[in-house]
Image 1 (cartoon, rainbow over the protein chains, first blue to last red):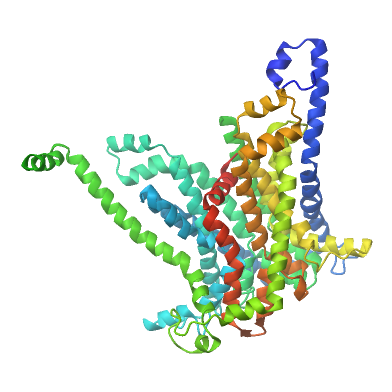
Image 2 (tube, rainbow over the protein chains, first blue to last red):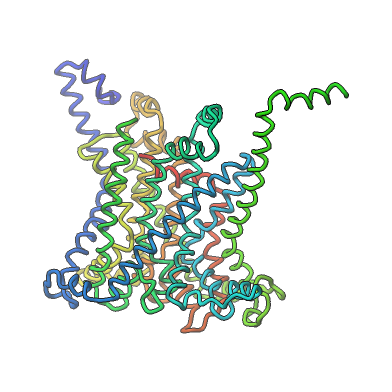
Length: 312
Length: 304
């Protein structure tokens, strides 16, 4: 009887010593099969994610030719450079502003889509999700062309109203605005779809009960919708913060860090130094600065997951 | 006739609340449509502008006419790109990479998700959490150590992997496998346990249970994961930029940017055509399988 169905609680409780022995053997076999099934995943994560992550730490302690251990010299060198602090500043501005606006926009749009009768929702959802579906490298090229200083469609349109021309990617603050705008355009649909899913899961009775109690739409939003959506809002925001903080494509294609390194974020500057400047240890040091924020976000997300795991 | 009219008139008077509520509702609906239109325009301007520019000749692009309209539509850009060997090579490389990566991803993550969702083994809970955490480690953190690792591996074994398109087959799964495994663990967990227990009682092995029972039942979840793996590997930009440089090894996004932009000369008509063609496969898939895509999107980031 090898193929006894696996029912750990019930079988173990009723089993005699002899049957427990057979069960143990089967468990061993089953866990072995399970382990083998998961083995490629473990190897992949171990060799291509965990090992490189630690290897990055090791690399960051070497000198430029990667022959000598220099300890924290790379980091000390970075701290003395103005560009580094510019990158820290821009990374934070970029990530926080973009995530806040994405979340706000996503929240508002999700409500509007939710308002529309169910029949038309698919059509609107489809159109609004298009920015998220196009590979960002491709859509950023379109933005680059829209922002073009001499022939751009934006400046032409603004020119008709007597405004401009605006140096979208040429001036430091406009360039910062542009990369954030493109990131919002690209990322807002993700929030929209997550919030829409959350809105649909709020039971209609709660709103009816609130309406009977005389709640206006603001009170309904504040006391019914937001508490019900709190988990999704938190996890989506944290998640997007990680992705936005580690963004590469948009900044790289739109401004390549310019003008004068004002739009560099950690990823693009690490690429500039590590691959283009072939100073691999210094590039690795720069990219490691993303770790603390990833760590903090991961802890919060994990806590959220565990909490929900305990509830169910 | 007259009687129905009086009833119609009387009804709102008896329940004044309903009348004002439906008027509120109609008003809210009108505003919803108004703002949704604005947001839809904001979403669709860049792709539409790609399409508009791709239909223009270079003369029309450099002429100071209204950029939002095509006065002399031409398919010249499309013909030029689709007959150039370079572009076809990029497209071919992208397609090969994506197809192989999707296959590899599914071969690794379906059994792993099955094992983690159904069969407990030592450390399986930790591994499931670890898979999710791996998904949070971005490509921008790993590209430098990976580059160095592959360079060292090339020096040590003589097998040159850098600057070959197939190096991407090894790297992309780090992006796709954790996510696909994660959403499939969630999907598999939602399948009733009785189903595979019955199969085991009937004498099926674990592998047979997976292929005969689980995969057919979990097909929607697997399709969602497949679409995801495809979109991710089609859109990836950083890894090919780091790992490939020769023109014949490039994939589409990097290829368009490095070959169509020559110095300061931007051939916008062709760049936009290339970008549109590069955006087309995900857009087409999404047009037909939007619901699976959204299901994968929402399941992946929310299911605990």
